Length: 181
Image 1 (spheres, rainbow, N blue to C red):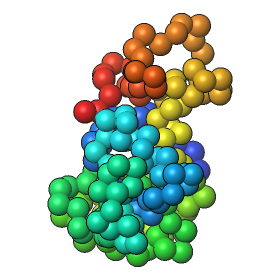
Image 2 (spheres, rainbow, N blue to C red; image 1 turned 90 degrees about the horizontal axis):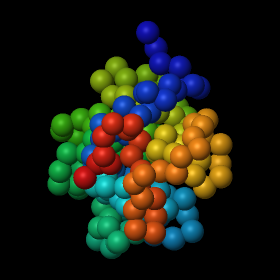
Image 3 (tube, rainbow, N blue to C red; image 1 turned 180 degrees about the horizontal axis):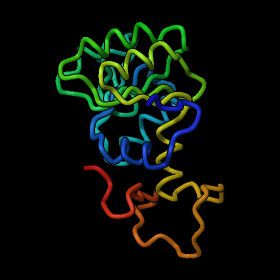
């Protein structure tokens, strides 16, 4: 059964975000107003180990994290590759992903990024695929952070979250577990 890449069940997205610990962000920007910068920072603040990948920033820092030129330069296994590149560049990114050992668990394509053939090849290699979604938005929606700030998250609750971080809410997306460490 093929996954419907136009609609993802909350359980599928939650399972991914609960299951990954390390995330490479391909196309991460050093510019603090770019979405890729903010997603890098946000996911790191939620306890994920994040590796920004940008050849022009290799050896420098993005969001306070060391940047890498290529996925192959990251010295530890990566669970998820989040792609901030235009759709036409995604096949090249998939080639880099498939050259990694061990393979990541997930290939995540950011908002506006879709590539059906890449999804098919990645799934055939055993990876889960998400297209046209943002892990920051999905984490915020599933954890209730977005709803707490006044955005409809499809979760109704009259109760204030019990666990709050220092200045920034750090809610878990799992109803039964704590955020990744």
